[in-house]
Every structure is written in C-alpha cells, then in structure tokens.
Length: 196
Image (cartoon, rainbow, N blue to C red; front, side):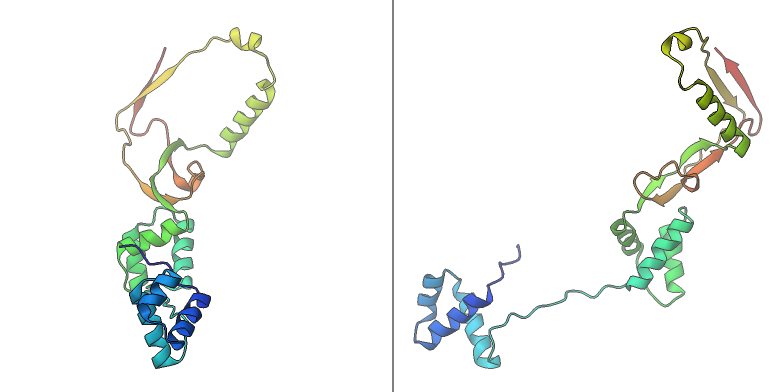
C-alpha cells in the first residue's frame, strides 16, 4: 500500500475550524475532500495536544555513521579488490555490526559497483614511451601510407593460462585505471607465438 498524501497545514486548520463551528466530520470530509479517518485523526490530535502540526518521523536510524561510510569508500578506493566480507570484518573491529548487504548498499550509494577486473598487458615506462613515440611519429599519416603497410596477426598459446577472475569495486569509467586491472605478462609459464 502506498504512502498517503500529506495534508497541508492550511487544510488541517480548516478542518479544526469547521469542527469548532459545529460541522460534523462527515460534512467536513465532503466539503474539504478529505477522508473521514484523516479528519477524525486531526480533530482528535487538536483536542489532546492543542496543535494541528503533522508529526514527522525520521525513519529507521542508519546502522553506519557518515564517518563509517567515508571509511568504507576510502578503503575500496585505496584497494579496489577489498571484498565486502573484509569490510564487514573491519567494521566489526570498531564495534559496528553490519551485514554484507548493508556494506554493498553503502558502496552502491557512492557509485561503487562490483565488477570483474580487466586484464591488461603489464607495461613498463619504456614500453609506454615507445608507444607514444610511435603514435606521435605516425599518427598524422594518411590512408595511402597505411594501405602499403603489411599487416599480420599474432596469437599466443600459453602453457599455463591465467584465467582467474578477480572482482573489485570501481566507479563507471574507471575500468582501465591501473589499480582496477590485472597486469598480464608474456611467456608466463612458457608459451609460443604464432604469426599469421
């Protein structure tokens, strides 16, 4: 059942004023288009408390403080591979008892989603510089140049393939940041390259 619409303060005062003037609750309900039970509740509250102000409830208190939430976010930003289970244990050490689902909800609220880590080649600084030099030297060349280039493909067959799945927490658009990837190296455990 949905939450009923809040009755404005002006309407509450009108209900009480009409009741004071001798109007019945049924007549008030028809005149002001409010339910009989709502009118009855407002009049009863006025008689007992002398006010027509609505009572506002703050709702269920959050298990984690803002500081606790900031600690969780900071922890996964430093180490995205920290699991929700690890975070629960960390909070338990401070005296806070929370469930894994609560921890996940906090991270989701901060736009941190659980994702599989992407595998990217482990590049040293000299690799990055060499790639940048190549792009700078050849990036401006037109299609005629590239049509004369002989293209080939390669594939690597590894003796021990690294197929593990690692999950981490990251924001949208951060998939290729180094700390959110799994570095891969060639010839891990022995491999052969085939060119075609």
